[in-house]
Image (cartoon, rainbow, N blue to C red):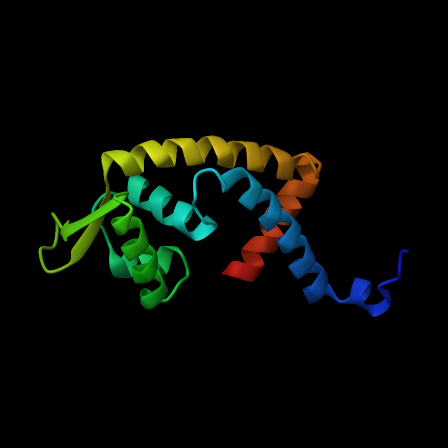
Length: 141
């Protein structure tokens, strides 16, 4: 039996949330074998791209509070994916670096990300992708 959604289909916020749920489900399917969440992948990726990244900088780049960022880093550190030590540029700050295991898992995650990105982009034309990216930038900045 199919039921109509009425006003739910006219509510932009709820529709965005439903779209996010569909994208998130696809993401989770591709990352289940790696045992990583989207936030963990983001931490690994930024840490890999910016070795010696400090906690405050990582939190700001991810639009997260410091407590959430540290919880993510602690979990990744327990798995042996991230290490922390004094910053090479500012010894007062603690910085994060990927371990060899973290680098290997990030490489696997990037393959899964490429598959996920292909799936998502296949749903839009090139022009629509440009518009979507522009619209998302307005929401996040």
